[in-house]
Length: 458
Image (cartoon, rainbow, N blue to C red):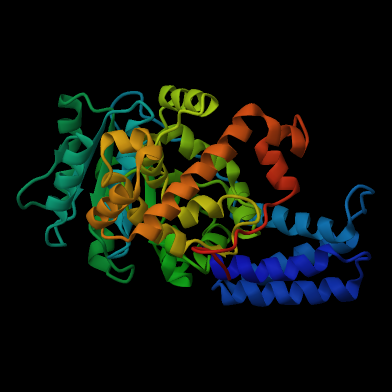
């Protein structure tokens, strides 16, 4: 996410961090480079111009703190202005006390509305609501079937009709939601071009009939300025309440995320960070600014872990580590948990100092490791020490690998047990500074990028 922008800004700000004295000359040069980096990221020209002007004015007028170097203060100014540029964001939804709350999704063709409708329904379902999905996209072939399949996966009702006009379908769905005791309705409307007057009028008719509490525009982040332009057009014609940016995990530039609030005045409410139904997140400008500047996003990572990892099972695992009884069965389970959190690149990118490391090779090793462990018997997973040369040959044959790879996994597993034992005993924390939390330690001293097989620094 935003890899190219993060790399460019990191190089620029790394040079200015070591600057002993901030002058008008070196500040102007840094802002010129930041301006070029943002323009390359497809950020709106006016947004870039205003952003760098404000940063330069603040940098030259900033009173230097004794505990912070002038260069570090410039970095903080850039961070704060990025937060101001993308925020503030209010994630609250105004719920309807007298009937189902209606959320209407609109957007261009191919922006990912149908999948986003299901993701949003799942997100709100986990907040304690009972959503109904409404298939109001009668333009795209199989759109209704797609939403029915997604609804079945989430065990949520889907309202659809064979034929009929979308405004009437949406209107009748509200009564259906009341009958099924659903307190929330998500309308999946057809994709359209903002220049298609007939379809835009249809959207306006849907809005007039059902009077939704929230209207969200679904935009593909990878389209950059096109997403911003379409948001402007939709906002002028139907007045949206916010934006959901999809495919943000694949956006290397960041132009849409950095421009859309400033240009349209409408906040980014949610972001899509993958294809899975659970990969919709609330948008936090401060966390996004930290990721853009290579500072990581530990808070979001912790929230993901809390949502995906079973607390009781985690305590059992901790006890096993303390007693040195961790098995390859546990290791395999942990791999499954990691996969639920998203790609390894995204997970490690949330850690400070790791944004410039390419984990794609390491991520490709996960299926190989799983195959090796799954080719072991239950007894071998419980006690790897019984795996002799003949067992290793059998495991290698069953997993499509070779004995060297099996040996390497067993060696790495033994090393991992030693390291985890150190953490469980608190020796590592003690050596690193006692009461500091893991997040604070990483913020103060970002970890060095790993080197060796499976990793390469960009």
